[in-house]
Structures are given as structure tokens and as C-alpha cells.
Amino acid sequence: MLTLFKLLLPALMPSWRFFKSVDPSPRVEWRLLSSASGPPAPWQEFRPRPERLSPLAVAGRMLWNARWNESLFLVSCAERLTLAPTEHSRQEILRRIAADQRRGQEPGALQPYLQFRLVFLDRAEDGQLIKAVTYQSEPYLMAALSAHAARAERAAA
Image (tube, rainbow, N blue to C red; front, side):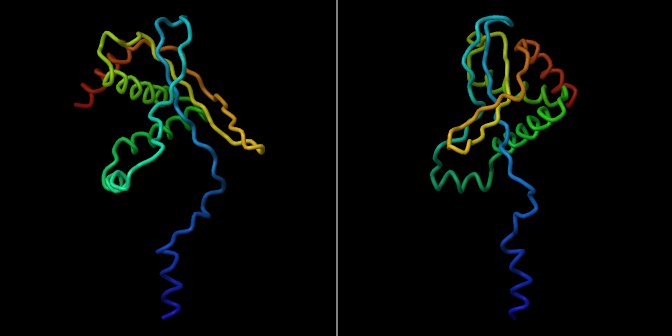
């Protein structure tokens, strides 16, 4: 009986030793600009994590959390963009930020240009947070992103 328990224990309580190290994951920040070379606007974190969730919200997220899955995909794109930049990763991040902006604003209220950057937060030995920018995009015209997204949707259909 004890041998059976020893065999089942690793399956019931998995080991996390397969990670060589746990590194900070990139955060995506964005800003809207009135022109490509206009005055810089303050950066805003894209889809910040809530500070607190109710037990009911946690239970609901265990069953269905498509937005979180998409956020994990964005982290994957951001990591790829940091290590080996590709147009695909850049476009995926831009497309999702632009879609969220269009969903939350009236069409005429949006600034015409969108820019994003990737930042890593790390804690120094003295406990202070260190913010390192690893990638910053050029300003992209929102209308061009909308047209590109529409073409991609038509091609997928």
C-alpha cells in the first residue's frame, strides 16, 4: 500500500523542478498619439491584472477565461519579439491592442496613431522595482491596422 502511495504522489502533487529558472515575463504597455512625431502620451499597461478577485470570479475563471488565454498568447508573442523580432509577433500585439481600443472608445474619439513597448519588471536586492524597456515599436496608423485586420478576417473566412 505504501509503495502504491509513493507512486501516486508525484501524479497528485506535480513537481515544478523542470523550470531552470523563473524569469520575469514582459508586460505590454501602449499609448495613443495624435501624430507619428507628436508629443508623447503617458504609457498605459495593456490588460493589467486585477488586484483582487472574489471567490466567485476565481471559480468562474477556472471554467472559462478566454481573455486570460489571449493574454498568455500575448506574453508569448512579447517574449518572441524580445528574443527574435518577427513581423507576426509585432502585428499580433498591435492588432489586439487596437481591437481593445476600438471596443472601448467611440470611433472619432481615438487618436490616429498607436505605439507599444515591452517592459520587464524586476526587483533589486534593496527591494525597489526596476523597469527595463526591451522593445519599443514605431507609431502605427490605427486605420492601417483596422484595414489589415479586416483583410485577415476575410482571408480566414
